[in-house]
Length: 217
Image 1: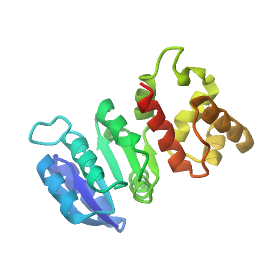
Image 2: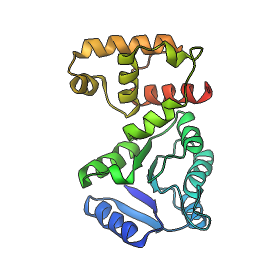
Image 3: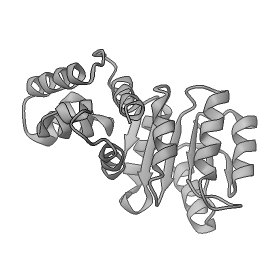
Image 4: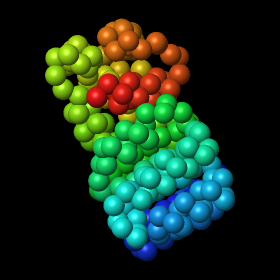
């Protein structure tokens, strides 16, 4: 599996390269700036991109902008964002197209190698890997009784956040200590209240919910 990695801090970049290689990934490129990332994504056609948000030269949002541009050229390109910050505008745009694997992890909340490697593999396979804090910040943008999200019960909101992390109904049931049948009922209610068609594809289901929330601002 070929990875393009973008991280401006040398020690972290080198550590990520060594970690991914130790787990069988091929590092197609490991770059430190926005222009280098743009060129690597355009030329190397990786299986997944792992990108920091803030890269040189401006240290603002080059990483996410490069990822968005690359996905416009290659729809569905799997992208895992690894950052210290939640850039809501670009994160929501990245999530909203509903195609391909997407992940957004916060650096200081990645606690072990297996967690990170699993996230990379899941995104590369077309799934999602979302930090709960990222989801909470994105969902927090929805407010007001006139918004469909306000129709959800507290339990349904809890299920929605776990769905958005990429968890299956079985995993959500285990987390909330309820039956899988109960989660299926909550899921059906969520889709009905948000006006979304139920799908058997968990990952596309999550992306559809996030896309809806994005366009419903």
